[in-house]
Image: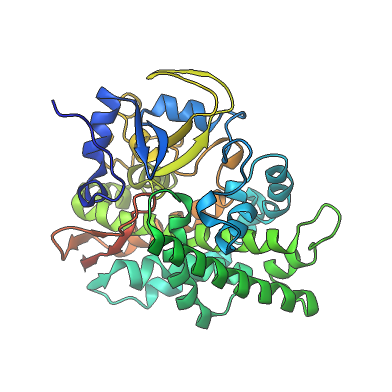
Amino acid sequence: MSAITFDPLDPQLLAAPQIVFERLRNEAPLLKTVVGGQTVRLVSRYADVARIISDPSARMNPPDSDAPAVYGDGPAAALWRSAISMMDPPQHTLARRVIARPFSHRRVEQMRSMVADIVNETFSQLPSNQLEVVNDLALKVPMQVICKFLGIPAEDWPSLQAWTSDFLHIFLPNVGGAEEIARVQQASQNFIDYFGAMIDARIAEPRGDMTSDFAALVDKENGISRIGLIGALRGLLTAGFETTAATISAAFLGFAQQPEQLTLLRQNPELIPGAVDELLRWETPVQVMVRYLGRDIELDGGSLQAGTACWLLLGSANHDPRHYRHPDKLDVSRTATDHHAFGGGRHFCVGAYLARLELQLVLQQISQRYRRIELQCESAARRGNFQFRSIETLPVALAS
């Protein structure tokens, strides 16, 4: 059998990662490889990913570093350092304490009626018999929700979406070349300029939105720095619609490919909360997260030393047959709350409650409105980004 090759820019891997993931899990669960000049371990089994992602000694950055060298002192380095998702303690502990408050289960439930209004209104404006899922629906719902919370005007959404597409390459800094790094730097500067101006405006004249609440804490005791808030707002925006939009698109794809699952959901609406987690597991919007081991560790697939750079292949872990029966099948009756789509440990997604609420309301609408969903394409076109390989276009026909 040929040696396993892993190239995150390989179109075949981007189109069908599970083929490679299966070989990794079975033949080389901790494959040592070089990606963009960096030696990493590809961690592919569920048990091993779960162990590392919840290990409090694992870190986001290597020792003696707080940002990738390829970003120098540019805007991408500034946003890397100010991103909660890339911070290590104690900075992470302090920043998360401030940013997580509005996204508690209780606070999100208080927003249910507002989110429901956005979902219902968006569905009511859709064509009755055909749809391009991504742009007509999947991006619109979460973008409206997070922008409503943050106080971002609708006319700014197209620019923010365009910057996000380039910015999301930031998290795998050793994969892209000079042109990609330049796009990341420019997108980072755009976000710094945009959210910096927004914070200054809210400090001068609060408007009662979430950004105004955060801005009131800038440079205050137990508050947050200005660049820290810029990074947090960028994170809330991109995470606030990227994961949810990818999962909404995946729901239409899954129900078109496995129509019996839509029928099951229509007949048993009480399955909707569990179906949300199953869709998150099945799609896994964020395919990989990086961790640096803080200690020597024994894993199911072998042992690794402290300091090792690990690519946690969440998309592989969430499809590991050692943990999930028939993992490549979408099963809305499955209990899959232990998936890794929201990360884990101290970096468990701040907006998980909000994402679940949006997805539950969307599934309610899908199951109530549509009896059948049919693809109007041979395959779903995916974004050329291994980490964030969401569907780019998905035309479907609908039957009520």
